[in-house]
Length: 85
Image (cartoon, rainbow, N blue to C red):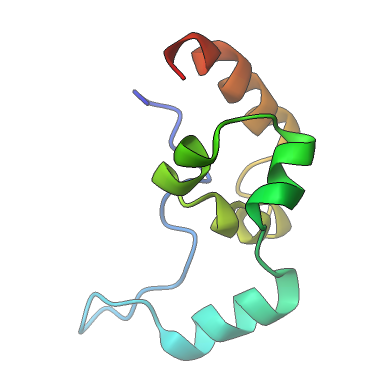
């Protein structure tokens, strides 16, 4: 997907020294916001599972929780790029 990657990348804190996700912050985010299952997400945004997997859709629940993207934004992107699915 060209552009429009806000909320799809840089969702989790990264350790500056190792450039890896901070495992404690990662676990805290997942505990606080949870992760989408494909079934849960596709009920909100009807996309193929291959697209969900390609864009790490499970983490979009964290992204929404952190106000990095909205469900409306995701729906607009899905509609815009639906012809490519």
